[in-house]
Length: 459
Image 1 (cartoon, rainbow, N blue to C red):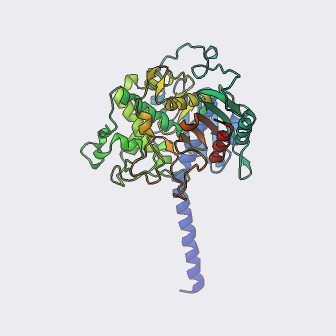
Image 2 (image 1 turned 135 degrees about the horizontal axis):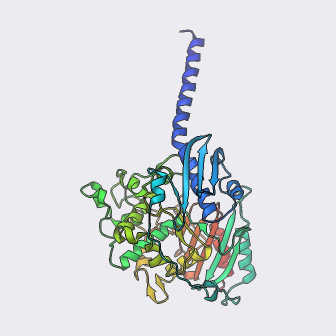
Image 3 (image 1 turned 180 degrees about the vertical axis):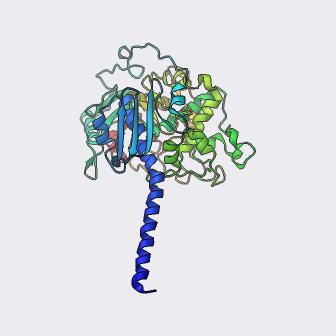
């Protein structure tokens, strides 16, 4: 065969390969892009009441979401996303439930679902002192360098990454139970609910703690997952799910089609999706951070309290007791809260949640969580080599790149935190009497942020 003809065939084969690979990638990725955009724009518009143009510019203003087209329908409270007219995905808003992507179910069936919502107590928070209400006194406890604290907050509010704004939207500092620092970006304030992303995992972990306190669950017992009976997966304990050592073959990678993106944006029943995955490791032997584990926990909560009481349960037994009245958990199409990712609350309500753990699960004289729950929550598993994760909370363990150093070298070792994508964080530092909330679109240098705040607290 002449060399020229051979080269031509090679070029054709390469082109065919690239076209086929592109089609396969588009088939896998486009529904994720359109689903992500539709779901998050829907919640931003109908839950947060934000301006569409601003959300498109900030939250969906980077590739690959810029190749999507998102249409808001105010008449039926929905958003439809697509990529070049393909892979259409629709998210609908329902009062009291937030927004849900339509997956593995018809829109008609989804809209017909009926849930018993919790009644919100008629309490005037403006008339109650913090943390039980929103009345904040100007006087602050001693030992605070006010100018230095404000400077630390300003640095975080205006932090940049690669020359671009990180869009820090809220900063809140609680010292010794007192709200001593608070600032918001333009368009946001103390009444704005914000997406917590994986802060949701810590909320889910707390709800498991509530059920343990009520004697309905045991963390050392096998996880009550019906599909796992009489299989190797029946060895997975509730504790393994909490500590991210279930052994399930789950990849937490948001840069490509993976288990986490397929679960969040293609699956209607996220817990079942994850529960069906094969074991990659022996349960309890390997740490593998997985949003899927958290959604299995969420379904365990549902099975434990029953469908009738499930939707109201988090509010009656946790959020409303803490006066976290802004908090919203969003369900998947099967009606199970997306315990890994979709929670909304004001910065103040996220801080109240942090205070619950600061106070060891005790609130207004009621032991909401078991007395030793927080202590258990900050103990890493034997499988966690970096010692950086407990019961759905991150710990100030060791740095992944340099295990000889702490993740946050300038922050006390007893710090633990709820951490969400993009830098949604609730930091609890008992030794410094601090709870710090930072909410934004992109991560900042949190070690520097906390270092500066600690320096302003002169105990």
